Length: 164
Ligand code: THU
Image (cartoon, rainbow, N blue to C red):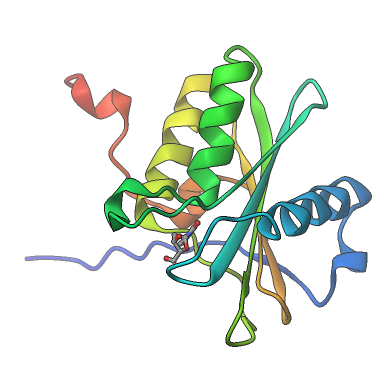
């Protein structure tokens, strides 16, 4: 006998940046600015991330590509690792992520790659607090989730290394 298990997530959807809470709007504006400085000569896909820390500091990052493609890094990890390096003891409150393409309109909220979600899970465990995620394309809806767990359920995390 088997049974189906349903996992559901809650996404808060906004029509525009001006509908966001002011703190979130400011953070997303920093992510948009950061995307403009991405080094993306191979994909022409410019991603920006802005991480808001509990101490009020904001750390930004953008994708950094390399001719040896796997050597590049996504915007989210550039921002998260920079935050981890400079403020190792300060919990992360929110990450805002957005992208701009040189060749088409990104009209849906940007979906972070699996590796970046895994890194976000690590920081949620490290700081034992939920990290909010704000996702935006160039146009279209903006999505807000209250925890990385919402966009990476059933994840591998440090507690899985111990027996139950
Ligand atoms: N990229 C990010 O920076 N973040 C994501 O969540 C998805 C993809 C970058 C990696 C690469 O430089 C370009 O976008 C195209 O994949």
